[in-house]
Amino acid sequence: MQRWNGWGDPAIDYPLPDGGLAYLQQRVGVGATIEDAPYDQVLASLPPSRLDPAPLVETDAPARLTHARGQSLPDWIALRSGRIGAFPDGVAFPRSDQDVRRLLDFAARDDVHLIPYGGGTSVVGHINPATGDRPVLTIDLRRLDRMLALDDVSCLATFEAGVGGPALERQLAARGFTLGHFPQSFEGSTLGGWIATRSCGQQSLFYGRIEDLFAGGRLETPIGPLELPPFPASAAGPDLRQMALGSEGRLGIITRAVVRVRRLPAIERFSAVFFHSWDEGLQAVRRAVQSGLPASMLRLSDAVETETTFQLAGRPAMLRWAKRGLATLGYGGGPCLLILGATDRRLRPLALGGLPAGRPIGEMWRRSRFRSPYLRNSLWEAGYALDTVETAVPWAQVAPCAEAILTALRSGLQGEDERVLAFAHLSHVYADGASVYTTYLFRRTADPDESLERWRRLKEAATRALLSHGGTISHQHGVGSDHAPFLSQEKGLVGMAALAAACRSLDPDGIMNPGKLLG
Image (cartoon, rainbow, N blue to C red; front, side, top):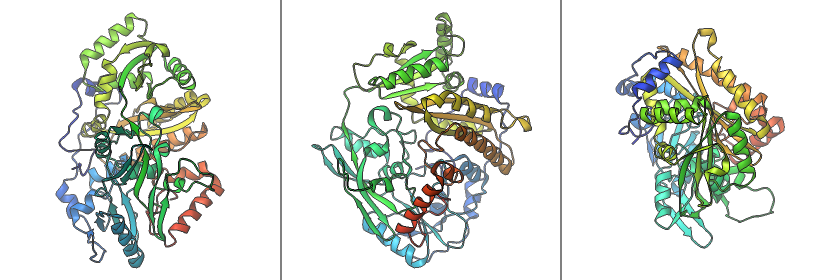
């Protein structure tokens, strides 16, 4: 069960510590407590469904409400204020490829728009219905959750695409394997969603991104099924698997996937290293990845993120210990924290330089890696809105791009005399560059439209900054509707025409997830 208007399981709470609240009030200002729209009131606002009765389709109000929005900040503003706008007219829960095929045929016959739905964790508007005259049917794939086969000789596993992260790993672990794909949304997202948005797990340096793990599968398109055989390699023309990767529901529905798996590693360790400065840490991480250091993760926080992490972790004793110890060793002027992941006993933190701080901080990060998103709920209730911007650039542009994004965000609301807390980390690293992941927080207002306008200004300013430094508009969250206005600046006119032609080829009637990816 998931919160209808927030992150994750409603039984799990991540309270904001008193020290953390005082820190935010000092950095941003006192947040205003604003009541959310009650569930019953929002439920009563749903318009009647425009769908005729059909097999597999549910039109009850609770199902339609819980599938109306994802997890972006605009989604939160809409849900918490009750100003949601558009709802799906129905929700279907297929249990087989054949069920999905029947739903595609139903949509084509009755002129219905379809939205594929995995775990509902999209932060860029992938699953939001567009307004219009045509009915909208959301297809929730989470009942397609079985492992269908495991080839332990070839290390290939076949899953139905609606399987969630924890269920996928449990089924593999029972046979001694892992996929190793651990995005922050791991507990709530699905394999099909990872493929459709080109997801990247936290330990991608060792396990690979989803495009490295996706070996083949099946895409049910409006004109028929597209089978994607899991060849180890092929020179037979363009790789059609790339049509499924990042397709965001525009070409069809991913119903099954063959993925490359590994034997469970002998060790899985996380430790901490401190650097005097962001620049010192950047150089150390770049040297490490270019020299082939056997790490599974190199996650470097800037000084503001390092401080904020300790302040919001609710660990005042650890914070005091860290500050005293770092100051004594000459790291008192804004140290930067690196979390180092290892699946190889040969890896020694000393190889990076900096100040190795052992495993306690790293293990604290590991324990909270999927729990920390719940802090969004507590921050919202304390009067603060939080969002992220992520990009990837070559190493030569990492430092200036990060600085430009942070400057754009921190100055973005000065005209309203509002402060923005913004900080960054490297989330994923490559031999030729890195992903810069920026988090920003600002005070929300009693007027949802004003809060949304603040977000728009900050989002646009940050995106302009990253584009000016040659960054991609999305490293790991896909395009959805939020990034769609900027896609042509990355793909160019010819690239956009090619994508549009692919959509027309597989979806000639335009029934699949309108408004996403291409806008």
